[in-house]
Structures are given as C-alpha cells and as structure tokens.
Image (cartoon, rainbow, N blue to C red; front, top):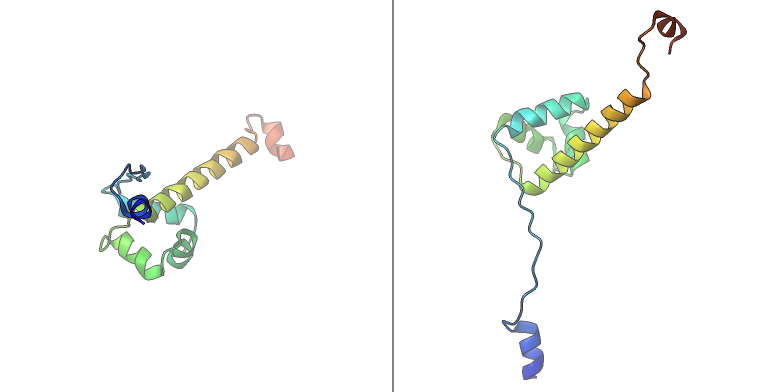
Length: 107
C-alpha cells in the first residue's frame, strides 16, 4: 500500500508539461477586425470558425472590452496563417499578364 501511495501521490520526479507561452498583442482588436474583413466573415461566422461561444464574444474582443485568451489567440493566429497561405497560392496560380496578348486571351 505504501508503494502504491508513493507512486500515485508522492513528490517524486515530476514530468515536464509543455506550456504554451502565447502573448496577446496590444493591437489585438485591430488585428481581429482586419482579419475578419479580409476573410469576409461576420462576427457569428468568425466565432464559429475559432470556437468562441457567440458573436457577442467577438464583438467584445473587437471593441476592446474583453481580451482574448491565449488559447483563442492561437486559433486566430492559425486562421491568419491559413488566410496568408491561400493568398500566396492564389497569387502563384494566376500568371502575370505582362503582355497585352495575354490579357486579350484571358491568360
């Protein structure tokens, strides 16, 4: 019994836990508004994409009444990376129309 107790509740060697050290920037409200406009999302749609409770939470973040938690800020950053990646892929997919012939042909 004593061995089981020590293994379960003892102060032995502790495992390291990965800690997320994310800081929410001071300009989080402007960043959030610009991201939402670039993605053409409503507050309700953005709340659904990042798993927030409702559009009221997004409104409070955007107005500065409330600060997003680090967990939600990670989700917002992930959404920003996805948006940037899709913009880069769209830019790479469209050929540059440097000649008037390419413009006329729709290339």
